[in-house]
Image (cartoon, rainbow, N blue to C red; front, side, top):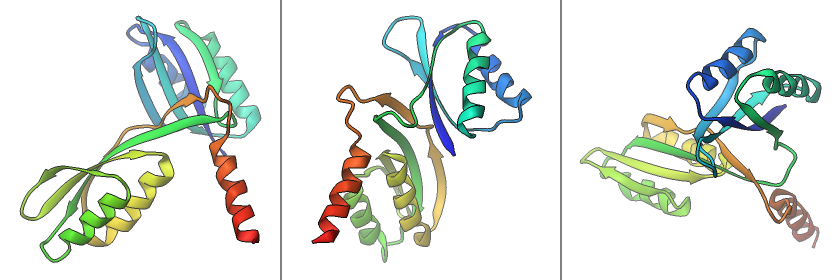
Length: 176
């Protein structure tokens, strides 16, 4: 199972290298990684997506706490959270298919950030499912380049799991 870890660290050189080294020594791959300044000066938030069972993630969490500069480690996988990614996607956009690509972009609320006679570059922001969905739809037009950020995540202050609400609403609506 994939787990999303939110790690608060003191913003000092080498902290990311020590974390990556810890994962490498234990044979774990970091599938997604995003790092940026947190709410307090001198503190950074690292959001990582890693695969493993609950026990493995608990062990990794304990190991992370042993590293210097680690302030807080939280597995937010099962906690109601807001998750987002950013993707820049350059797609072949001949005149014949340009309007189709723009229609797809509009549905996904993607922004055109560059245009030429034969290519469109789109900026897409959203949950990981949205990112994968638009990428899949645009494959048939010819994706030239993709650049994605890692997932960023913050727990919901409301503690409401909107994914669960979508599931319940869909189930209820289909039952009618």
